[in-house]
Amino acid sequence: MPYRSIMVVLAALTLASCSSEEDVTGSISSCAAGLYSAYNPKDMEQCVKVCKVCKHGATTTCTTSCTLRGAH
Image 1 (tube, rainbow, N blue to C red):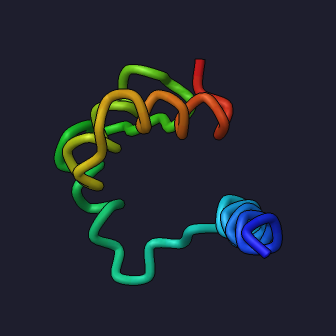
Image 2 (cartoon, rainbow, N blue to C red):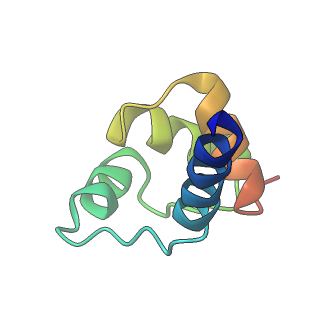
């Protein structure tokens, strides 16, 4: 039975990571614009800073998230 619970959790995490993660209120976009006049989410430094400041993320998770989104 624990195996099934683990599989359900892994499936949920996989589906969550595939979501488009849209910013409905625009708060992240306006926060990013406040940090960078020409925000480039593909720039690793900018992406990580916006993630940490605007989304209150940790360096490790933000770096991973930005890498998965194609930042260099």
